[in-house]
Amino acid sequence: MPAAGHRISVGQLAQAFAGTAVVHLDLLGCQSASIAADLATVLPGVRIGYLRSKRIDNIECDPRTLQVIR
Image (tube, rainbow, N blue to C red; front, side, top):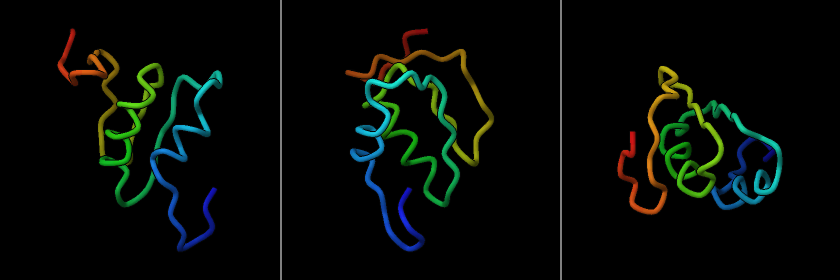
């Protein structure tokens, strides 16, 4: 966890969760939507929720093209 006033990058978050058994992650914070979107592209096997969204788990996207599969 970054200390108050410090930042953590999407790459650092992805590295922290890569290879773990984490399958669900909720992000809470001011820029959680944009961070969640970036993180979802590098961790396609993890369901990522963010502060200002209704959780929708029935959408699947191709992480390479960002196109909706189903």
